Image (cartoon, rainbow, N blue to C red; front, side, top):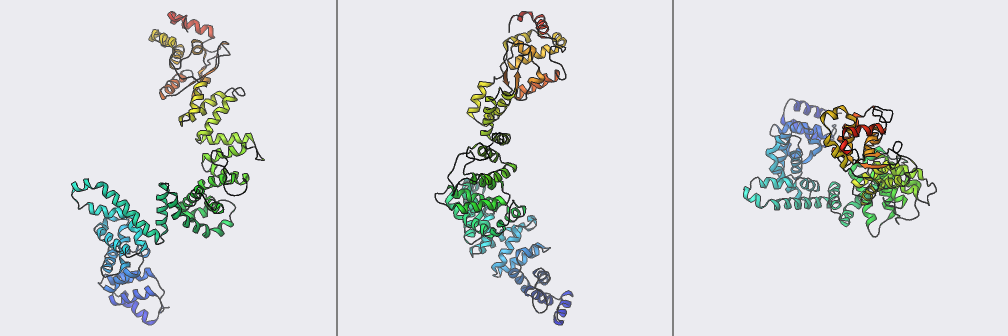
Length: 528
């Protein structure tokens, strides 16, 4: 409870007396004497005293009010001016708050006039060894170069443009290194990120390993209580720390000597934090193999397929095709007690559907080998081989060329189409469409006349099968490779939509169709 003396000061401060406002601000600043310590309340009264030109008020603001509290003050410009005055009077702490307010302002246009002075103040504070200032300067090192460039002649800018960019990078790296060496975690993470992008594993581990070890120790108790991935743990760790743990484990596995238990701890912490990449790597770690299914000698002991399946399933459900492919390799292994070819195929197709090239190739090869077990297996084979070939698989492209034909114009159809008049095309739309179809995809005359387009169009290919009406023919597939082919086929297919293309349909049987064709183009009656 406030004492009588404090009550008198409060009444005077409310009445607008600068000295009382200063005194009240100091009491809230340091607490005691019946009043609690409250930095926000202290800032309120000190700012009112500063507005009445009390030098001690802005000196106290600059030296004792942290940036987090200063952010809540309504008039940021006044606060920047007071911190600037305090810095000019020799208070280093005020220079840091001044720079933070100006450089991180949500409305930079209002404080743009102070930007140059804020950068100079920040440099001075950084040179004095304040780690927080060094990290802030690293984030705004390019701004100092921009300010200098604005006062440089254009010709000089053109000559020294590349030097400026290089200088900016060097300055950023220098201040980031200083802040990291002083213990700023964000700076350490930034240097680790740079090393990761450059694939400089020794430097990456130098920066990242201590951070990963600290995280592992910090969350060891929490991890011991978890049985399933935790959204709460994911929020506590954050995306940057999750990526750091996974990357550190990856880099350690690539080194000559590493602690296998430590790698597993990092991966488990990130995996329980719902990081799908960590779940994938942890599943592969337990399976003692890589994402291609090749056996690896990592850690101690044999593979634990039960744990591997658990984590790989989670990673697959999170959207990683490599996880489904790895699961298919596990269910294929002869040493796995629950080996199951049905589960293997199911996971393989999931990986293929999500774009895994090796899975698409294997699905295509498997479907082609088993083409006699189901009528449409050859169509499925072409589908998967097309997908794999589109991703650059030479094996898929070679097999695809053997089992399916490319669209080539049929000479007989081209010649017949040229002799069709507009009146004949209107009078016989089905026959004209079939001739056009043969022109596009290289169909023989029997194929063109008998093809049931509603059944033949498989989306990615045409399944040509007229054996039920023309015994001498063979089933074959023709690829649909271009957008023009697809568009033309869709247009022709709309004509035959809801039309019976069989012998009982409006076109009749093969003999009737052939007679109609010969009647329209008698000069091509004997050609095929």
